[in-house]
Length: 220
Image 1 (cartoon, helix red, strand yellow):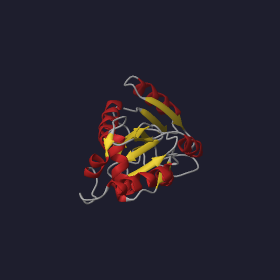
Image 2 (image 1 turned 30 degrees about the vertical axis):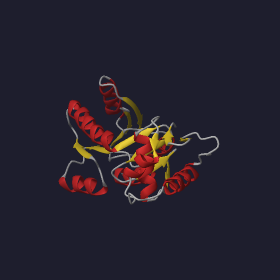
Image 3 (image 1 turned 90 degrees about the horizontal axis):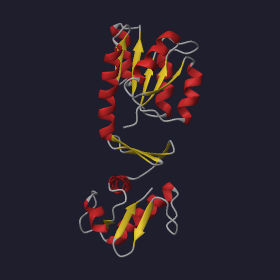
Image 4 (image 1 turned 90 degrees about the vertical axis):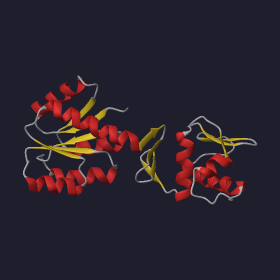
């Protein structure tokens, strides 16, 4: 399980303490005290979870929350001295995965992070160039969304979950919501569309290989 944490906290003493504490539990924590620096880093790097303070220089924490969510749907724990019920409600309405009012025990932070990551791990697949969110039925390739149809998503997910295994056209068909009487060439057509959308050359495939007379396998 990926354990990379992005910490956005302008209290440098608090920042250092959290980094060291999380390190003891196997977390790799990258920290910023300036919102703009955090945004630029987040665009270029993938994290398992974000710990976000609200009282930041130059930008309100809730505004930063919105900007981060526009970039990627990474889980966010709000960590703030603004612990009144109004701020908590607003945080959860924006989509916060948790809200910890300062001061709190650092062990509690670790447990909440682990709980969120465990849930996230079950619904998200990170493999090679791809991130697949099974709950929201979305696929990102190198942080860019791929516009799959419903059937294309079902086929791609099935191949991903059976990486390096040969899947027959019949097996692929049974994993989708297509009619059971669908012909093989329909599966081939969907595979062709998927390859086109992810830039995969059928003659020299990087991701989806054809297995003559049987079906396909994902190797990326």
